Length: 173
Image (spheres, rainbow, N blue to C red):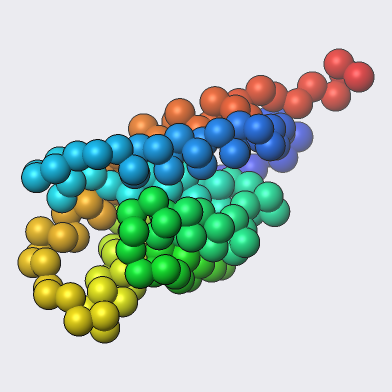
């Protein structure tokens, strides 16, 4: 077993509030882009990916209320059943917050399958609410967006880590 020298670990600064809000709004805009056909089936849930990222890396700043609010915005933007995304995102971020310490210790490639399962569970909740609302089953291709989101996780994580990649220097004070 190797021991970790904690004095040599880097301390990363927290992300700026404006960057968190901007990333959530960009995710919302990407989700609301008007696309049709296969692109609509393959488009991952960018809001969910951004919420999961901030839930893992900044759990004290992005939590249940942010997930619920973003879900309501998605419901209004997509003209879905009001509360469908809010419910799914709230359950998703709850699980992400429960597992954030575990997920934080893994590298991005080891996080991806776990994030894929979280996205799949989120889509399942949305599908269940649609089926309870008497909608037809869209087919198994409905779940491809979770797989695409899992593949995009490392890229999105790297882009969002830009905001807090500056290292804390105690000598700079």
